[in-house]
Length: 341
Image (cartoon, rainbow, N blue to C red):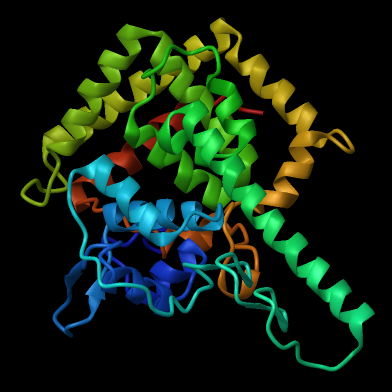
């Protein structure tokens, strides 16, 4: 594997913020209120964020972008993990989070220069202009509350965090029995949607649909992943197990791809691409709305999608040298099997 494409094992707060579409100041606020646990620190005393830290941060950003208050996010994540956070009250998040959502104070107060509680109004523009500004501010608050309600309804309908993924992603799982997907698969889809947008995650969903509907493939997937997990820092890159596990991964991916073709799931992917490219389609509109992140950064700016090259240096994966070598060998096997032009 080319060194420039090797993901880091941990990243600094600046890279973590860039990947998640937020600011270092907002992340520090998440730490201060117990929303995001403190990560390990490097030899220089600075925070270093690992894979699980980033997964939690991405879910936090997705929930905050949906208009969910930070206290409610903390409660939801605490219920999922069984770990309590430290409640130290509200303070400036530095990233537009908390009571201020996309620049709109949903708790009341001064919005765009208008005191919605009935106090003095600055500007002296006359009653007509004042009422117009007040109506616009209330409409903005209404839009935020509507978006928050929609997010909550989706979470209830889809089952917790799945409702925070884009509709084009969750729609692909409608036919699956409840509980078919694992949390790690939802985490993976969240990361993919952050990098490649809703379409990329919807296509990746095909893999998880196949695993959910083919018990033998699911069992083999678990076995291969367990073998890969054994390739930790104690295993040398030239250990015979590395090549053996790479061959097992290659064989599994071939079986999975064959099932996807035979089951018609590949055709579903083709239809998805066609629908996405159709002018005025709902999926295209959703891509414009979500912009790959589904959440808003500082000052209401949408978090943009990023290239795979950008993401490699900002999303950590705790892979040992042996594990990376295994991935490289599996890719070489796949290249050897690829049909020639």
